[in-house]
Every structure is written in C-alpha cells, then in structure tokens.
Image (tube, rainbow, N blue to C red):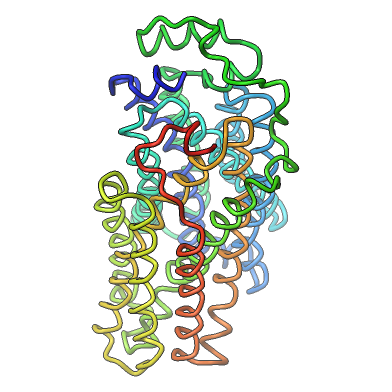
Amino acid sequence: MTTVIDDAPFTGFHKRLAIACSGGPLLDGYILSIVGTALIGMTPELDLSTADISLIGAAALVGMFVGGALFGVLTDKIGREVMYTADLVVMAACSIASFWAESIWLIVILRFVLGMAVAADYPIATSLLGEWLPLKQRGKLLGFQIVAWYAGSVLAYVVGYLCLTFIGDGSWRWQLASGAVLCAFFLIIRQSTAPESPRWLAQHGKPEKAARMIEKYLHVKVDPADLIEGDVSLEEHGSIRALLHTKYRKRLAFCCGFFVCQVTVLFAMLTFGPQILTSFGMPEGTWMDTLGTALISMVFLIGCLPAMRLIDTIGRRPVIVWCFGLMVLPVLFIGIWPGMPAMLAFLMLCLYAFFCGGPNVLDWTYPNELFPTHIRATAVGVTTSVSRIGAALGTFLLPWSLTNLGMGPTFLYAAGITVIGFLICLWGAPETKGRSLESAAS
C-alpha cells in the first residue's frame, strides 16, 4: 500500500482531489466571514442587540467545536465515502434556509449547524486527501488547504461588498444564501474524484475493493493481500480511547497546543483588525481601517506560499519552530511600544501575518501525518475542535482587553500566548518530511 500510493506519479486525478477537498476550508473562511457584512443589514431589519450579534458570531464556532470531534470519529468508523458529500448538502440546505429566516434563534441554529458541517469536512476531506497523495506532494497539498481558507475569507468580503454596493443593506439574505453556490460547485467537482480511501478500505476487510480503486485511479495493479498491513482487527477505529493511548498523547498535545496558541491571536486579529488599527490612530469607520485589515488578511495568505515549499525542503520542524519564534517579535514590539505610529503598527501586524504561514500550512498536515488510518480523521477532528476554543477566546476577550487593559498589555498577552506555542513546538514538533504515512504515524 505504502509503496503503491507514495511512489505513484502525480496526475490530474490528484489535482482534482486536492481542489475538491479544499471545499471545506474555503467554505469555512467564506461562511465565517460573510456574516460580518451580512450583519450590516441584518442588525436594523431584525433589531439585533449587541448580545444577539455576539450570539450569531459564536454559533458557528460552537458548532465547529461540536462537529469536529463528533464527525471525525464517525469518519473513521463508517468511512470517508459516506460522509464525503453529506456535509456539503447540509451546508447548502442551511445557507438556503437562511434566506427566509425571520427569527434570531433560527439564524443562530442554522449557523450552529453550518459550523458542525464545516468542521466535519476537515477530518473527512484532509484524511481522504492525505491517504491518496504521493509522498512528495503530500505536505504541499495538505498545506494548500489553509490557502483555500483565506481565499474563502477574501471571497466573502468581495461578495459582501458587491451585494452592499449594488443591492443595499437588504442584501444580507442573499449574502447568507450565497454559500449554497459554492457548495453546489464543490459537489460537482467531487463527483469526479475518489469516493473512498483505499487505506481505509483495506483496514475494514475490503482489500479487493481497495485494489480495484488503486487500479482505476492510479493505473497500477496490486495484489489485494499486499494491502493488508498488520492485524487490523485489533485496532479501535474512530476511538477517542485509542487516540488517548500513551503512544499518541504527546502528538495530540502538540497538535492541539500549537493550533490553539496560533488561532487565539490570529482570529482576534482578523475579527477586530479595524478596531486595532483605529486604536493606533487610523480614522474609524473609513475605508482605511477596513482596507488595512483586508491587506493583513492577504499577507496571511501570502505567508503560506513559501511555507508550503519550505516544509518539503528544510522540513516541518524547522519551519514551525522558526515561524513561531519570529511571530513573537512583532506582537512583543507592539506590546512594549503601544504608542507607535499607525503605519509602523500596520507593518508589525503584517510581519506577524507573514510569519504565521508556517503554522498555518501545518495545521492539518501534522495531525494527518502523525496518526494512523484507524484514528486519523478522529485526530484531525479533535484538534480542529480544540482549536476553536482558542478562536472563541481570542475573539471574545480581545475587545474586553483593549477596553480594560489597553493596547500594550493586550499585545504582551498575545506575545505570551505565542511564546507558549513556540515552546510547545520546541518540545513536541517531530520531523515527518520524506516519510510515508505509516512510518510517520508509527
């Protein structure tokens, strides 16, 4: 199995699969971001209070916390194929239903279910992709999934801007429903890709079917008996207990730890970028603070591009350790000198966003490589769920901290969180470059 898939030539099939699997991260970025512009028209029409707005913003994050762990387990138990398109159908249905929503509680429920469906796609799609990719392309294309997240976020702001410009504040229903178009697109793309992972099939007593799929998509004949690796009957598929086994605890702690430390600062910065820039002297409520935040978001995406190459040249461990170390410097500088000029502060935020590219591309690469097939999706789901705790904390604590503590202490705390992430990487980041999935997870 390892030799056949890892040494397979990189073909159009792998490219289509990578695009299809990027649908979940792209929709995550889109769905979490489009609500920001939709709230502009939704707030007066539905007479939303500050608490209502916070509830709508939190609903998707809470849904992702629940959905990641739940559906990661199910993906390992019943297969990638069963879950592959169901989550997109749910996303499309919730997006369309949002068009007719008149109640705040209906919107909150729909956003919660959307969050669950988006989180479900991470363990489904990244596990399927990682289990099909040749060794040389695995790190780069798993890292590409986070690029899709930022692309979805940028696309959401573009769509929201166009809707507000040409339709007006009443366009919020169309904005929320627009996610269904992306769901339909990725559903079509997914029809031409592999429905199931041959590694999962072989572990569930279906080596003949796995051999037929390898022949169909990789054009290589293989003996079904050669696909069975070890005594798979002894493995607990999709088991949290198996994930917490002694030999996986350090890996799980590392993946969850660096992910949380990264997104706690990142989500806060992306969500309240205009407010942060306004605190440094940029005019409030103008195109300058909004454009500045958009440019910072673009730098987050740009930083991923060299990192995607570096993890396959110098390795995973050097990239994540050095990037976390460099991420400390700009936020620490702001914390020490909170009265710096606005343009210098903007430059510091851009440096943080660029250095964040290393951890970004390894968010889903590491958990897919460090855990075996029978708990791979479970591990991705759990790490995604735990990361949303950090995202929620960063999102909700930043406004309070800026108001009650001020800019300097707020960024010193951000630097402290990033230092913790750096220490976690020094302690636990392994090197998986050039190793098969079986070898990396052993």
